[in-house]
Image (cartoon, rainbow, N blue to C red; front, side, top):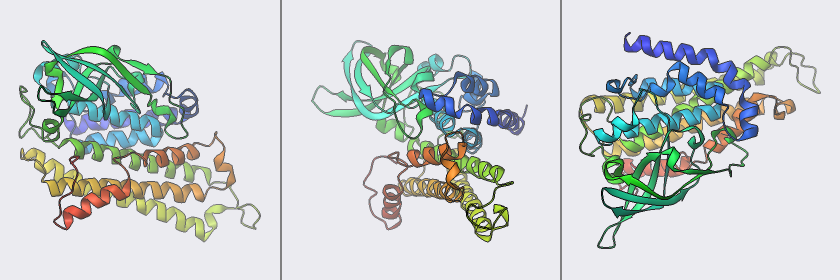
Length: 391
């Protein structure tokens, strides 16, 4: 089966379950974690194989194709889309680790890996590795993950500290039931913790090496078409979630229009009102603009990866700005549609209100906030130091 045929197979399978993902939204939100049925359907569709290397039985889609799958999942359920993005990007990040770690992780071609990037853990060196202790908030997808990345600080003999990422089985961690939120409830982004857990040295990566794909003892790398750059890859995939949510909101809005009038007016068909027509066109154009912008960074990142080159610091800064700007366009599209939906849209039985709340919540993520990312991009465009290591 060709890559395009594999992609179409996965996309067709995901499209077929979009109504189920959407229907499961209320119950997922109520329990603070997506339903097991969602995970089972995505597993069957091959979604958890999209970032796994082919040598382990994965589909090894490029970033553009991964983004298409992630967006399609988010079109059905924003929280499920967010979790899918986390699991896919974390699986890709695991390919930056030594072969020995990859062989443990990618045992059957399908894997779910969560990530906690705030370095709120501490590693202590011991023979053969480290002991890890810490607690990590906002660990999206940890309830259904098999493995987890935990960012921690490693203290060297001279007293200096270095940020590292430890990869350990989720079974070695404890999850606290503390995810009570108004947006993204289904992501199950609870607090996870580890208490003096042993992590072998080959499953601990220096953050600086991960940022620039310079980790050693691995057979993949170079011009294999998958070396996208850590932060750029994560942000590009995150933007796909926003675009998918906006597409889903657009579908939901249009589906609700037939037979709807405008209360306290003489309009009996909302579709006939010029303002509604303008609002629909505005939302559609914002979504199209976000997709077009995504095409710019995806082309650049793939071209560099195919050549075995890293993005320049300026290019990475631009990707940060562009992905956040595309996410903002998607959020604005949802806001337009939500505001055009009348008072009945606030009912929990109407999925559009959940799409609206979730995209608002996701836009508050530190790496998705518009102004901070535009500042990084603007500094680079003006020839200034971006003044952030997260590139």
